[in-house]
Length: 157
Image (cartoon, rainbow, N blue to C red; front, side, top):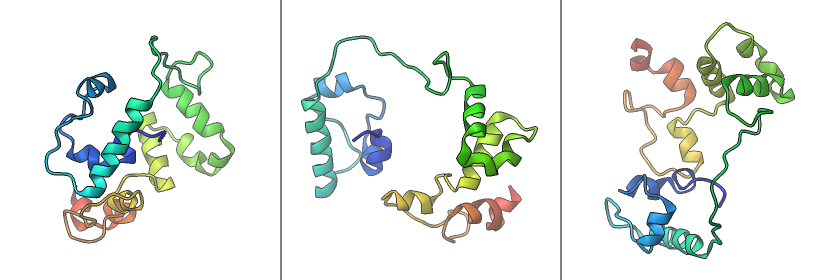
């Protein structure tokens, strides 16, 4: 698996009414969670595979250790993100973003925007999201270009 359920199985996550449940609670309930509606057979099979994988996983009883690999002190800082993104060879064409005098969160958002990584509906469909692909404002296909540059309603905001 390797990815969170909210990314790997977006439909199941959206339908689940217990989004903040821990793995331990899920195990205590024997995998019985509440969903907002009846699961179609393919989603139910996905859920059964998740439950089976969870029960078959060999858990260790020890404290979690969180570390940040982009920092020598293993602690998250915005500076470590900035240094990593601005020093990576693949990102050299984004120097206009990293050298600008903007807050880090705006630099990172702009970088994601230029890389086409913002989760607009067309990007989510590529990740097997099942949903309404059009812009809620004007019924055109929602893409990064549409949402940020073309949508007449978004331009007003």
